[in-house]
Every structure is written in C-alpha cells, then in structure tokens.
Length: 93
Image 1 (spheres, rainbow, N blue to C red):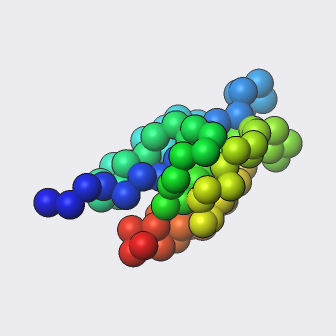
Image 2: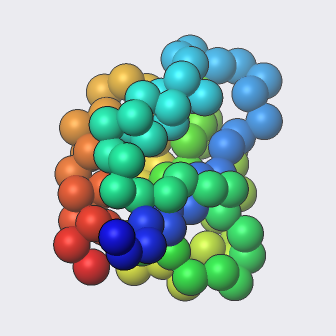
Image 3: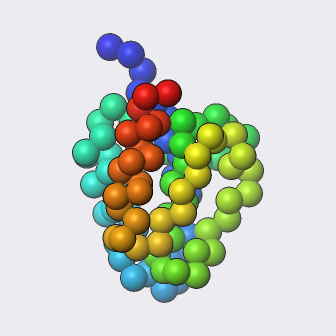
C-alpha cells in the first residue's frame, strides 16, 4: 500500500466560530482515508492546504504555505463541496 497524500490544515484562532472547524476536518479525514490531514507547517510540501476559519473574517495566517499547489480558505459549511473537490484533486497528484 502506498503512502497517504499529505494535506495541510491551518486553523484560525476560533474567537468567533460559526461552525465546528475541527468536526469539519474530522469528517473530511473519515471520507478521504487515502490522505493524511496534518497541521500545515511553513515550508513543507503538501498536495493541498485547507485554511479553516470559523467565520467570514478568515483571519487564519497563510504565511509560509506557498509550497502547496492549491490553497482553499474554508469559512463555513457552504465551502464543503469545494473542500471535497480539492481533496479529490489532491489524491490524483
């Protein structure tokens, strides 16, 4: 069995959450067991990065995440389809 594709995640500070950010990422990991979702570190290579914010202020830092071919800022449950599409593309890389 091959190694899992790494996908980085960066969270906002959670000061004004409008949806369950951690639950959202947990559901994605369950739906996509072929990927490894891990905290995004500066300078590390990822298949994609999810910047998960609890509200529309989207204050989570994207500094140092330029090594990912795609970065998606998630602000609400409305962004779930885009996040799933991103993970599907990441699995194909």
